[in-house]
Length: 271
Image (cartoon, rainbow, N blue to C red; front, side, top):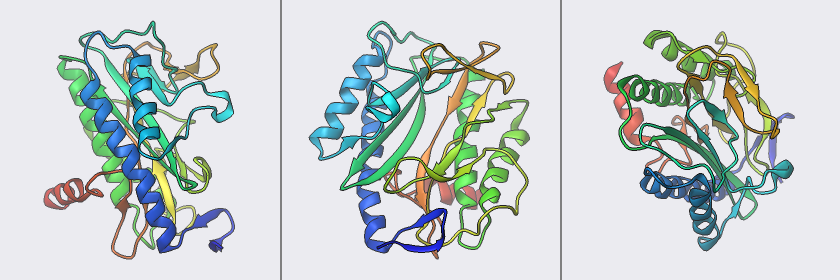
């Protein structure tokens, strides 16, 4: 049985969190394998095959494949594609591209979900900076996920960091979410907003946090495939995501290989 302090948010026991950690580690290791595999000339379908094989060979089931009809193991979103890009044998990565790779896995009925944005070969300084800002904003959001905080404290921390770094478009209408026995659960976690609103965070709650940041405007549109979301101005976007659980001692990042130790230490050092 689940402990339920608030009807809309699934609260996990310590044992259930460990099962989520197993799923999270599988996702994290799959993404590292994919990061190493990204190079000019590889197709997004090649990456999808690598991901599915690794997940299944290690006792997991891809979360995305078949989800509301999605046909692949990963979402592979290149350049102006923000999220939900469908892998294709005809989509060849080229030097100077950036690719967001979103991956989910199920282990023993529990989900992990994470994403990285990876440069393909050499990319320009503007894109390097976009990736740095977006990834750092994710970690600022995760660091705000402490017991006793409010849900929108996460949103505000993400937005505040992005706004402090320059004129970027923070995508609206897509965001983080609860996670556990299903990949997408209540609540939605926007990547912008005022602090101090929403449910109080409690140990055992688990969330996926995923900022999406554009070089240009925040405006988006969905392609006719019913999945791929792109920037309306054709400029590049970046997307990073981790699954974490709230603990009495701070956030524990279930999809990070080191549970977030390196990033959290860096944030404390810069405070």
